[in-house]
Length: 97
Image 1 (cartoon, rainbow, N blue to C red):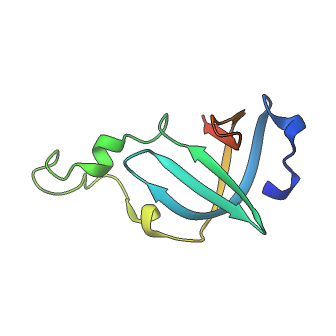
Image 2: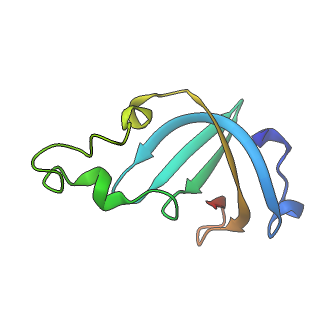
């Protein structure tokens, strides 16, 4: 869980769970939370932001083969796995693999 992450974990590969508070398709960032802890997760390696943002790509609608409902499911449990890095502002973020 997010509350177990410490500064000693920076640079390590982790698997953590949290509730998705929000997803920003323009930056491909997910904000996870658990208790009073939060983690900013970069999901750009697994999600194509152009496909999420563009409605023109599939003739005026989103890709019918993809379920986009997850973007609107707030507080849903999410498991992420990736390398824990420090962001430029001194916070910790996880790059999703």
